[in-house]
Image (tube, rainbow, N blue to C red; front, side, top):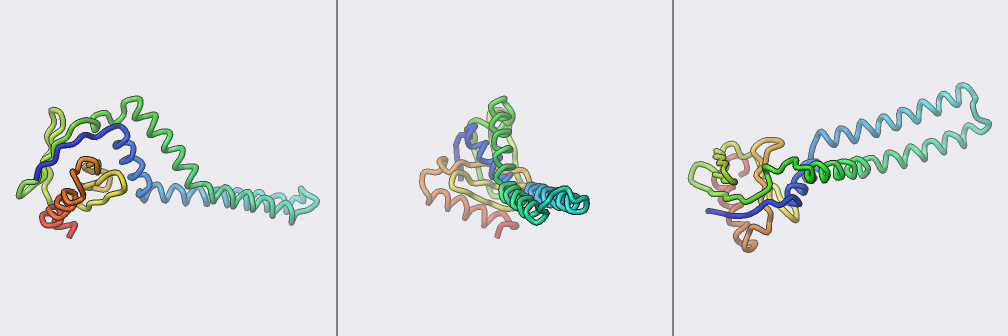
Length: 176
């Protein structure tokens, strides 16, 4: 099978966000920030209660914990929005430009061959760990953070996309 397609800045941005959304590291960062917020609020509450800094410690504690709940609830969205802005800026500044352009993907009997501009990558089927897709792109992962990005618009129809998936499932031992 041979597939010719283009990866745009928007496609690359979607890959960055998809990787962020599914990253174990990002999930751990969100958890750590949430724990820090809760710890700081707890510390402020205890200091205020211990030193009797307020006339109504119960009301003060309730207000602080409401603030903490709001911070914790918005942590993931806030961190995602920050990363989204950073990715957009970096891509507009030229980061990842080597991944943007025209591609040819060929499946032979023993490997994937990816041609882009003047570069050629050959990927053994044993290196393919998984195939994922969202509503915009298909990602053929060859490691935890390395993927072949194929916009779904590259396929003539869903039948061609299914044909590629079936070929990969047959040839890649790790995704069966």
